[in-house]
Image 1 (cartoon, rainbow, N blue to C red):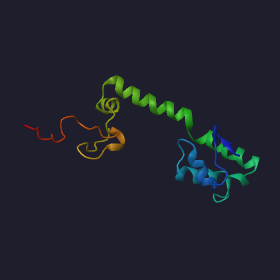
Image 2 (image 1 turned 180 degrees about the vertical axis):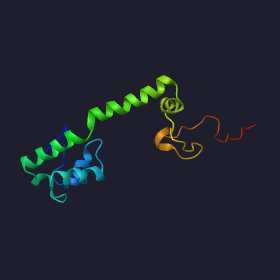
Image 3 (image 1 turned 30 degrees about the vertical axis):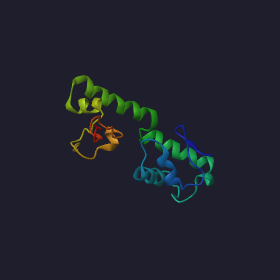
Image 4 (image 1 turned 90 degrees about the horizontal axis):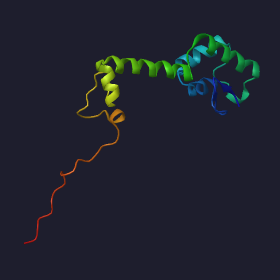
Length: 128
């Protein structure tokens, strides 16, 4: 079981896929890390030796910002925008898209589950 940057990588995945479980590392960076560490991307995580794991860890520590440090940086940037009252900060605070997407339709991921507005259902005719 390989543990890199505080994240336990799944054993049955290929190494390049397993590295994407780390926050801040996608497929492109994953392959670049493995190329720098001289490791075949298609080997399974369970087949990695301790030396290979340490080479991957050293490469990540020296060249990339990942996990907690990256999350702190991102949340600090969002906090700065909200504090100065920027438009993007207001959108973050309201939970709406901040990069110009339309919200009349779509934007469900950012806005959450639909809420039904009261008074829109058809009323049953009253008996007289």
